[in-house]
Image 1 (tube, rainbow, N blue to C red):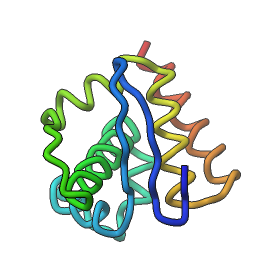
Image 2: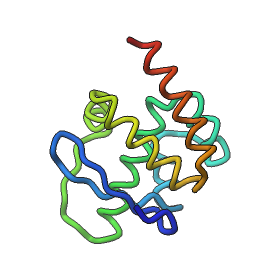
Image 3: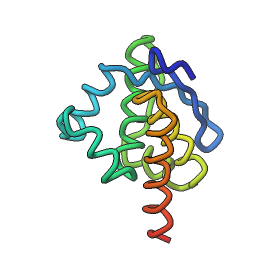
Length: 123
């Protein structure tokens, strides 16, 4: 993972994805999810089950656009369903997103604890 340019790789269901979580990805996510940029931190803390997969999804779309790839990406709901199906994958995505956005271990620990509480409460 390269937090300086927001590039990270992850796998879901045996498929490898590369995301480029940069300002353009945040812009696309803001537009696509109707969340103001200034509300991202609150959104991440209050609704990680939507925000984390959304940031990864738009990060992947940004990578596809940036590289000019002809890769086909499933719709957001399918991507989200796959991301939330495996708690280990979801935790990895959470760590990647938080590391890229903050670069800080303390912020990562705080969000990871919040996500664990929310996911365990859903079981």
